[in-house]
Length: 428
Image (tube, rainbow, N blue to C red):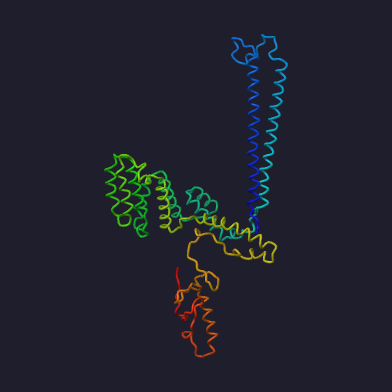
């Protein structure tokens, strides 16, 4: 069993943290000791220094040449010199230990290079992005991502440098969507309400809750304004909540209950959750999803999805590369622009239903769809064809007049038999 490469790196990090802890403890102790001795010497010098009425500080006293008597005894001077030597020694020791920490930190990088793959060239197909027919598509995906993030100026510059011409309507739509998202983050509902009104019919076709959420937040804003907004809140509810009663009756009843606490405020009441920022975050997610749906785009950026899938698959691909290196099938990977095995990317990256035939051990395709037998079991069309041909071969000798209609196919999982025409195709 392969050792987890993170373990030696974690061990090196633990060593560095221990060194830092020890360094902090010993250094602070040494510096505190030196500081205390320096304060004692400073007090000794101040007490031994003759102070005139005109000398307001130690510096002026040291500059004064009126007194010819020695300020400090030879023993005191000796103590000062010893203390200064100790300060120099402690300073050198602290600097030396600090340099040692750098060497321990550098070992972490060396350990990472030793235990982790530093080059991923074996997984990339440079030609896939350099071909004339694929390069424009790559630039388009990057521009799509930039537009989704609201970086229109950067996307415009990329299109200019790459001599691309993306549909201006597409750019305008994203620019409008990003402007509405920014307004929502600033607490402004008007741009989103205007957009929802313009696309009201399409939102109703998709049974979207965007319009209701917009009016609910507008109502909550009135309620949060205090008792002076009671009349305005009631009138707003009468004007805008009525069309949503069939689908959002319980939510409307809940939000209307907040009127009782308008004079005292919603904080500390069962309706305090209506004031949380999560209400706005949910509204932004709903708006983004509906806007992308109406524009015929996915809510998630294709570039972000690809990067996420690549990061998920990377550890598995590294293990496969190590297993194939030095074996007779080492060129299996580079033979085609595809992975040698299937990699599970998690449920978040499932975008359609997948059926794998239990007989053929293959995923269904358009030319090989899943077929439901009359008993309820499901196999692929290719498996059904093979079972039909096998039965023809076995029973065809009994009668030269055996036809397709007379052929019986037995379910591979139960005793039920049927003709090849009885199974039905399943469409996900």
